[in-house]
Image 1 (cartoon, rainbow over the protein chains, first blue to last red):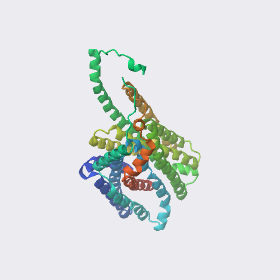
Image 2: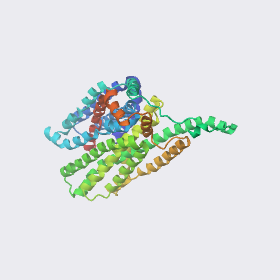
Image 3: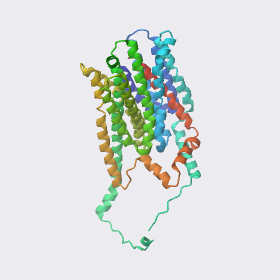
Image 4: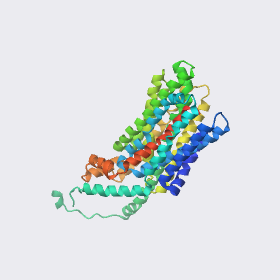
Length: 169
Length: 291
């Protein structure tokens, strides 16, 4: 857990550079790909305990923290204040429901692969591919701002602002 | 219309008043800067202890479940342990959505304080569990609070640092390091627990409740400052909603409109959010291995 955590701390600091260099879309795709490679590397290459486990654990900790941090910043950029809490709750936290399913399904999956935990875990990690594909539809920050501006204009047109009449001097 | 006939006397300002008026924007700017750092500190501590309370279970799993189930059988411990873990995850998922909505309605700081109190209190109650069902119920509430705190915390920080995009990204990246720090803290508490056992570890989970005092104190100061500046006590989101209403815009209608029509690509963002699910899957899978 220590290797995972220290890797995670370092991974967070990579994010600002990634976003500045690649933008959100490419950063998401790169980080998901890195997560896929590192987890497959751990679960498919390590058959017994060795120092190599710690190296892989550190690598996984580093790359896993990147999508977390990216998504936090991305959500805040892409949603209006009025719905930001709900948006964050759904996009950022509700995914845990699948983690709950994965926890319960671990036993049957291991049994399906003939008792091989490594293969079963590697199979679960393939879900990163969903992230890589979904990132193709991600909007980079500048696009988000334009969309929000267009949204504000459209909203104003459909709901003309009525300035409340107040008593003035 | 009687007030229209009133003749107001011209208001004279002294040099002291003018100086105060000139200094007001600078004082406000300094207060805003401080508020940013307080938001960073509060969310950092909140998420740090989130991580701590979330990972305590992975350390306490075997000793706690073997004592509560009165067995040493690894299969039985693994089976019931994974049920408790799943219940915790479900609580997390529900809490993030539920408290996210609550924070939009009643304000971020207040909701975040309640979520912290919830997960800290429930974590402490885990220490008093007599059987695995009680532990599962307590862990559900821990998950509920943590889920809410994590989703509100990042939003709160994003709003506090909304001025400069680059600085906001750095602030959020720094805040995210708190999860790793929290995991390390759990490890250190475990090393220090010695003979005390798993119940002691869960009791340590009450510590985050102290952050609420920090949050409360800072939010009271902010409210006081806003009152001095002639603003309302409502949260930022409530103020935005009030502005909608004041401008004759139907809040609910506009919200639905915004969700479904204006922001046509919204669904892609949700999908991307779901894509990040795999990170959590991976972490939970990894934790399940006992690493």
